[in-house]
Image 1 (cartoon, helix red, strand yellow):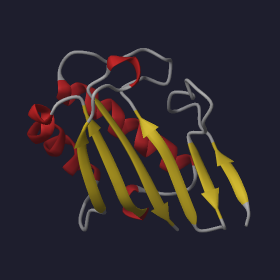
Image 2: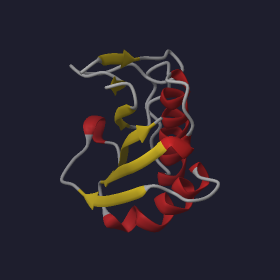
Image 3: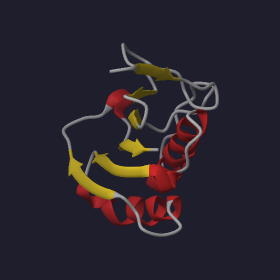
Amino acid sequence: MTRTVVSTDAAPGAIGPYSQAIQASGNFYFMSGQIPLTPAGELVTGDIKAQTEQVIANIRAVLSAAGLTPAHLVKTTIFLSSMDHFAAVNEVYGTLFESEPPARSTVAVAGLPRGVDVEIEGIAVY
């Protein structure tokens, strides 16, 4: 198996011991959870839609660094601080895909890094 780290300055760097994404066996890309951090490391707070828009921008940047687009995503997982955010996050998340969105799970969790309200991770296939 081959394993290649995918990294870009167009999305925030890792804030722990992980990579932005990993390409495995040539065709699989595993993207770490993206939170609403700007590439400069500034946290987007407040409005859940604004937080989700930054997460989506980070996802696009990490995928682009691997030469991929959102159409390559086959599975995503959305982590929310509260299911009360589901509808608003869903509205923004839907803008990531022109058609045929990937399989997805959405879960509410007790806490997320840096106290954010949304985190999204994904698996893409080229």
